[in-house]
Image (cartoon, rainbow, N blue to C red; front, side, top):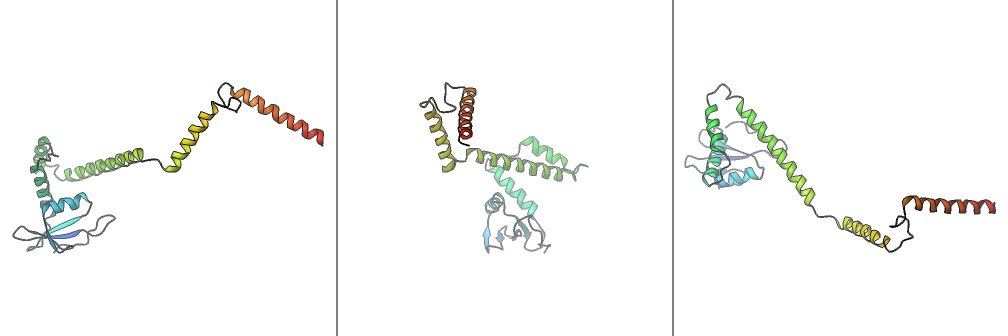
Length: 183
């Protein structure tokens, strides 16, 4: 059997699945038979797996993943446009055949990263405010509303900032004069 030391970058080792001659897939981790749909769900959950032919020990993961895509496409989930499929088929046997897998992998990795960043941004934008934030905003709104009813409060409508500063300056000068007379 091929080397099973390949691990995902930050997770547990891949689940080993064996495919028997009767086309049944056996998950060695859960000791149960699985379907292509079960394997598709593992992919969606980010769980890595490898599939080996039970008789020969050959790694057949790529062909099983392709079967999953064919199954999904046959259900009406047309993710891959016909033009893309035709272009992909055209690259088989082409001199660029060795470059295409790396290019597609890099492109999909970048797309997945952007999708995750967009998802996080949306979650952050739509997250509910904490009770503390709501309380602070309510207090600010109340203070602003109350300032309309107390016209002599600094910053109240009707008094310019210059007038408020002049009044504070006059008060400070009066206090300073009083302190000088005492001393």
